[in-house]
Image (spheres, helix red, strand yellow):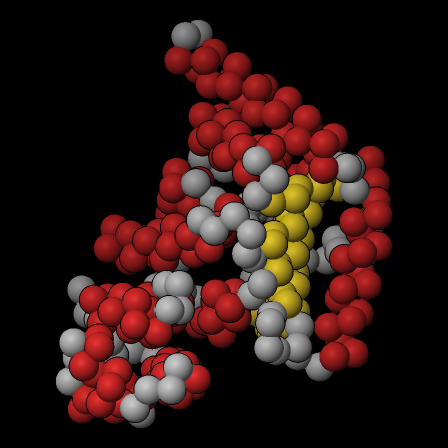
Length: 279
């Protein structure tokens, strides 16, 4: 299947490569020798004229010590691997040192299991071919690799109880998904808080939001709706989103109580799955 390229993202990729190369004190020629790539190819990548392949990206990461950044950035260059409105947010996500998300209806992408993600990507009003779905699935699972490192980014996830109760993919899929979240929370890799139905209206009920902090950039907020998403960088708007998140967090269950609820709901799904297989 043909892959569509995103020229704007190629330019961003090239700019980031140039910045990281110069920060490392390397010329294009020196980088080409260490990464076993031609200087001309590196020049074309930095100018946004060429798309690196996976092996190029891995060699660049190794030489520049960028911890997989350039490999993770590759999906942004592929117009079919992420929704257009999410491409810029994906770039920010890969750089973040701290991420705080509120999920009103679905498990956030970086926490999704393969089975849960496959169900989400297979559903919807617009049918997808198996190839299209598999490309999207590969990108979504790749995003989860930011959790491979224990300390960075710090991740806080605030779930509406609806996320736990909506049986995406059926009880077996949900059981696996919720236990995956519980395991991450129990290992202290992420902090988890659930907003129970009993809270009623809360400050974030209107939709998904992701707050991100960085080492060298000011914080941002990303808000998403149906087929749409927006990056907010204006400090006053970002602060409003942060305040809303804090207010909602104040209404949520504690980390420990949230994990207990998640495990309990997972057990309910397990029992339901067993009844389906053994009526």
